[in-house]
Length: 341
Ligand code: PEP
Ligand code: MN
Image 1 (tube, rainbow, N blue to C red):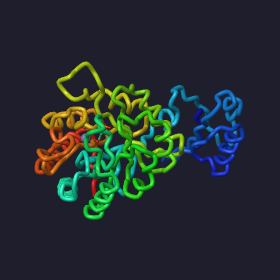
Image 2: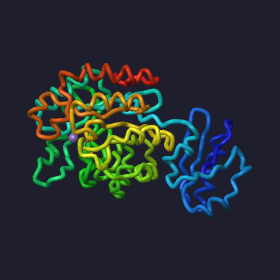
Image 3: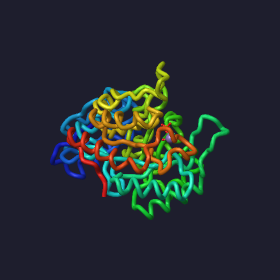
Image 4: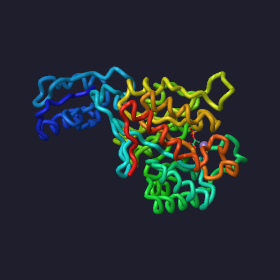
């Protein structure tokens, strides 16, 4: 249930609505938009319906949210879009976020030279995994704590905010010391205790769509984070499993406008993992920007031939400036501006 307050509703009136919602054991999520304040009441449906908030002081109207995901639904924000802001870089609305960097932190030289290149080309944030979800337990699993230390160094050197994956809630504390955005990988999209833990941390989240997850399942996963009071969530389409084997996965480009219709959360596209092949990364990125994506997360490596992980899909750092220019041009056509400092 969504309680839309009148434009001139006072703080006391909003507080009284919150108290009333909480009096039946429901949770009140207050969302203050530019014009309107909306109180989302989440909890037992019948009890909330019986609150009779229609006509309550300061209340304009009460609207049920029909979707199973409530806080993530477009209805909840009443047409307003969430903008995720990380250290002055914005993703969502008219802002296009470009997250770039290596798949995995492999060495100091690799990370710092790639970080410098993406910064110079105009990236918004730096990506790099310290804890890697590898299909084989015998593959390189990432540098762990040492990888986090290198990410911190790259952040100090370039000033770029860091996006890095958390796989195990036991690593939350050290990851929080470095990550400006916590990435939830495709394989963990439905790890609900991990999602709740990250939600409670309050840190912005990049939530990747599971390999075989439906759009609604992605939104329900986002709901687990939002429910903890953290609405700084970027949804990420990264390719899904289909019968097609010519590419690593199939980028579901339709998910971009579909997610944007269903949810107020920004949508980011990962063309690198979808394609698995470098040559496809630029055309998929242009398609994503044209489809209205709010950002891209893309793999870049200073020496892809030598990469330990995902080299074939990495854009060489030397080519990245050209890549950014082209993406920026298409984003501009759909009214978005690259958000970088
Ligand atoms: C990654 O971004 O490095 C990654 C492993 O992605 P995904 O979880 O989408 O496979
Ligand atoms: Mn990768």
